[in-house]
Image 1 (cartoon, rainbow, N blue to C red):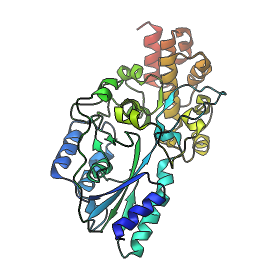
Image 2: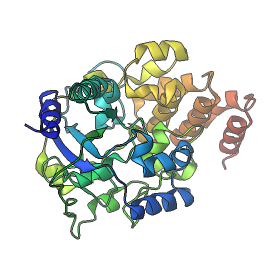
Image 3: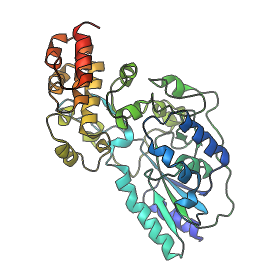
Image 4: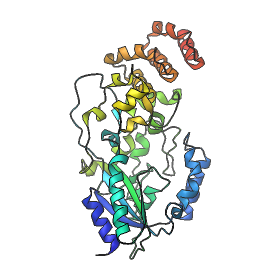
Length: 366
């Protein structure tokens, strides 16, 4: 068995649902397209993406002499776990975050593949979307799927709920396959379903409008125009992937990754009345650490402002007293959505200007 076949077989044995090989090169057209996306500002506040452009364009900067890429795909098309009945369980969480952080789960797999390659006198370097590597492009080059109109990788077998990891290697490839053909056809369900119209006509997402960006990466208050579109999304968003006909056809397929009820349906009370340190301890090893406690509390109040779920009322009151001004601002907005303007009086003298301004405008009926 050849070295590429051995590594691919090992990846499958270690839990990957599907694997494939692609050349370690990024077409000039793809680089230009990505640079145009950045130039248009559609990466929002993720300035690190601009700095990483040269590395993304040239995989050899990640691994000198890189010739090929082993792509691993793991389904996170989970069957929903049972919903806990205690606490305030309001709001949706993107499916990939239903399981402990996939970075931590996949890193040992990549390390094992790196060691196996070294044992065969080859060099390898693995990444789980924490390095400047174009995983979706390589996955398409490995015939694992195509870039759908949502910008996500879509597979005829696994749909759009796919977690990707890659291993750059110096192994030469033989009989390289052509990229997977586009199977979207005339379907535009993902584009039409996006709650904030974040999907452009060029199969690229404008992060400035994307619910996933706004609830995870964005710092500070969410722009007013997008708060209603967030709906009940507490962390991330699955709409474009969930409505894809290929996803619906695939159904629940997750084999290796496992969902946890407390992550799929977190108790919102856990984001209030605790320190950032306690939050980090409580949610260690989960994706919730990315927006931090104040981000999750802000998101919870946005959800409650949209859903007006009665069980969340104590959290609106707690949010007014939160040490993070971003949370207090979200509490003021949510109270305005509920029409509970009398409770804004405590925020009229808030030390932060944006909180005072929000409360004052609502207090005045503006």
